[in-house]
Length: 102
Image 1: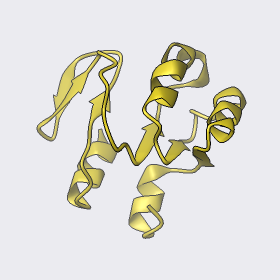
Image 2: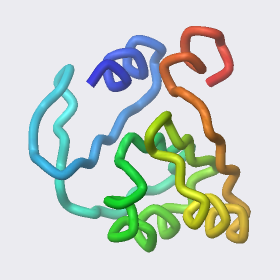
Image 3: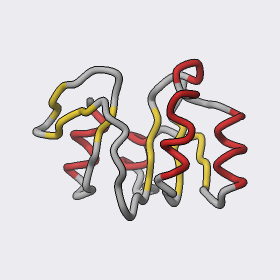
């Protein structure tokens, strides 16, 4: 939830998808795997064991990069992303934002 707030505070558009519907900082968290255009970054907080059902969806969005936050590291998805020309990054979104590396 903190990531959504910080991303918005830095002026980044946010689309949130999770296991449960909710609203954070006026951003609805949906559960549907809806298509989106021009996705720059996917930042994952979901643990590796829960990511597999999202592989096809994540890769179909053709993001420029995927950030695997601590606890979300996943060698399999990392390699799949690389094969599709998507830059995988193991880092913390909050740290990247606070240090200007986002």
